Length: 230
Image: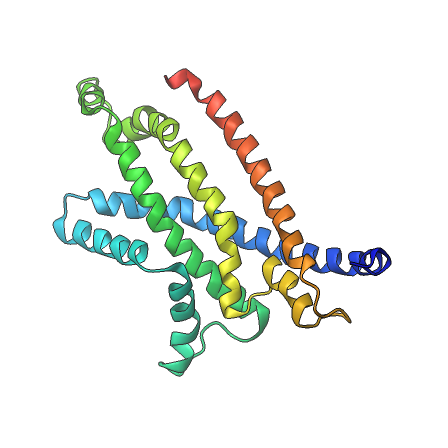
């Protein structure tokens, strides 16, 4: 490749990738903010003693975990407009981002719910019984006894899901959300006076590696802080 041409194209490409990466970061942050609490709600539904609720929650989780996220995004974005004749998402990048956020939040909430459920059920039942004997309410037992032990147990599997989420954000391009992969691929087809260039697409890997490296370091620090629960 011509070095002079590469150096000429580099600022244009980096600027476009930075804009795409901001969209990726936004989708990642919104997904975590929505999926972490929603996953806990779904986990409680799955563990509920009210049989219809637990069966329904587990059925929904089974559907979401058993189908590709890409298909879910296509259904969420196109079904209201094409089938119901009611485009609830609106037009433009804002509508695509909103539909992507809903799809990602619901998908990851279902995965998180199973991690939560496993973490809660791994805490010995005797601790809850001991708390009841001491006069604690069930909510007090959960927040003061179960929750912190659960967090210690779920950090490794949750960190794996979070790293997967970073990479899965690229699937949003299926509904034309202009995230970082979209930005890199655009230079192959023709964008901002550059066409037939494949190197910007490969360059996006640097962004993912950096982002996942930061997440890995943060998770490592969190695990050290929770070591006293061993």
